[in-house]
Image 1 (cartoon, rainbow, N blue to C red):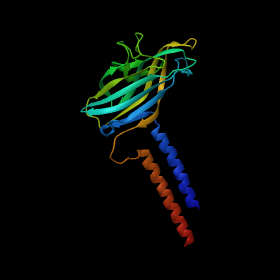
Image 2 (tube, one colour; image 1 turned 60 degrees about the vertical axis):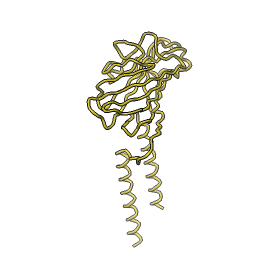
Image 3 (cartoon, one colour; image 1 turned 90 degrees about the horizontal axis):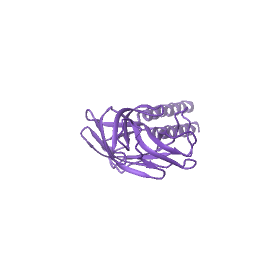
Image 4 (cartoon, rainbow, N blue to C red; image 1 turned 45 degrees about the vertical axis):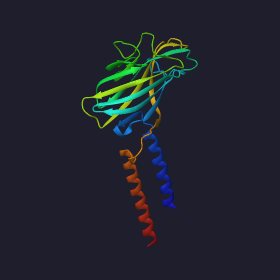
Length: 236
């Protein structure tokens, strides 16, 4: 009975740890992840204490389309999902950090301008790369472009590194909102992205647990073995 309870407890702990790993706000791609897509949802917050702005939201989806030498190629889509009490807003750029350090980037489509190692406004600080709607000196975008309420835009971007990367991790995701209406005293804001879902059409290979999961399973198995040994000794 005690052994059965131990197995159930371990399974519960492992399931929670696995869920935390999957939903971590970073995404890793390698050459075997072609067609892997990750969707993020973004909130909205102002620069004054990071106050969350209800109704100010967005989403992005990034899909790896290929790896060529030092370059990782992606397709992207961005949607302005803002709703009441927000009556107007534009998503004018999106940004994230990379590991390893990015050397250059290009983009097409709705956000066809790129900037590296630049300040993201409203207290975010420097980001590794941003994609924006207009040719400006900052990551904020501008010029009246971008995606308004209910609009979606798509395109492609390429990330190039100084040497071939066996894997690339993207993290710290942001969008920029401008022309905000319906929220007194706020005309611009940012949004931080959290991973909502991951999908892939890749086939073959065997899923490899994350390092922390391997450690957890090892400890769990050791504990089960010890409990089993104690039961055997009691019966002897």
